[in-house]
Image 1 (cartoon, rainbow, N blue to C red):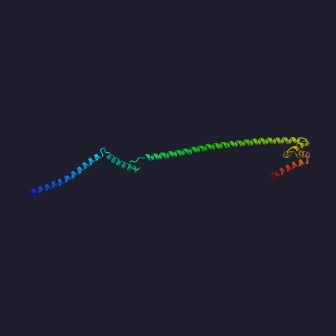
Image 2: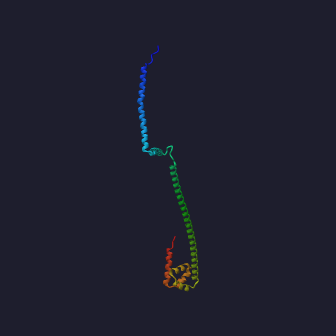
Image 3: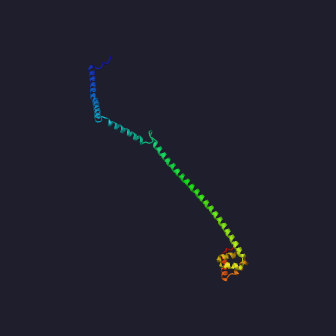
Length: 211
């Protein structure tokens, strides 16, 4: 025999309970929907142009941008700032190198001018030395000629000239003459003059270096 199905009363009671539960849920859902509509209406009345909504969206977008900017190595980071800093540093280094190169060129120019002036000074010194040598040689030749003239003069006439000549010059000329000629000329001088000339010649010989 087949088992007996539920009685009509039980089925009716179960259906009534399910209907009651649905009826009990319906007011809660309707209340939630009503609150949403009321809130939306209130927001539209308070912000008819949607400025508050736009400001909220901008705030959320700005927070996201700050989060991305805080991480320079993130996937959305822009390396333009770093490249600009590197280029600026490179430009500074190039300018410094150019300044150093300019200073080196100025130093090279100054050194070249110094060498040129030094060479000109050396050339002038050599020319002056040569001129002095020529002058000394000419003076020596003049002294030799005068000495020869005094040697060939009459000793008495030469003695009168040496009497009035400066003692130093007279001693110089007599020291260059032959001994016999110098003795004759000094013999024609006064004793005081001959003594003074002899003292000058002796003093020169005493100061002369000896081996």
